[in-house]
Amino acid sequence: MKRRPFLLGAGGTLLAALTACSKEASVPAAPTGPAAANPGAPVDAARKAYETSLRGSGFTVGQAMAARTVRVFFDPQCPHCATLWTASKPLLDRINMVWMPVAFIRPISGPQGALLLAGADPAALMDQHESLLASGQGGLVVPAPADEALLEKIKANTALWTSLEAGSVPHLLYRAGSNGPYGQQSGGLPTAQLAQMLGL
Image 1 (tube, rainbow, N blue to C red):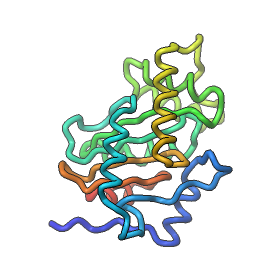
Image 2: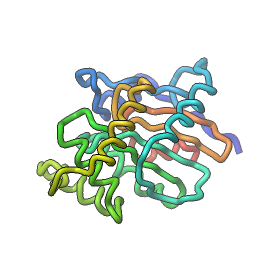
Image 3: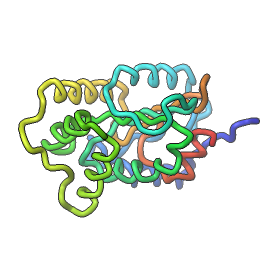
Image 4: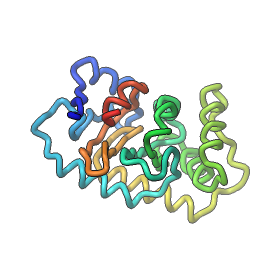
């Protein structure tokens, strides 16, 4: 069965602009890789970026052995990352997602990311965090100085994300099948478009 291409036209570009937090004064990077409306983009670059992301640290949700995998760089203080978290839930019975915290929006981003990495049930902790963030309470309260080793992992994730020249979060690197295709997407997506991107 031929996979339908996932294209973002002018409307999709606007969607990406409204669904990402950027280091550059709220001007997020455009989607790249096979998901972009640039058919000339080298597919090998998308695969290389995905493989580079495997060096990051995160927590996993969804199906461990799923052929379709998504690796997400996110800042715990990013509301668009929270939206993607919610949008991805209906697909978790068919995909594997690894959420890798970075820190650049606020000073609390790093300690909150470390708290999420340390959680015995990070998915439940993420639900709690996003609920607190959505209600204007700033997310999880960090009760003590964060573990330095975990903060180093957040710093390493942030450096890795920066090396990919993503520019904004959430930044997704995906494999839409056991052998690809591979792609990247900066900015969150609603459930239906996320499913289409992954060939579901």
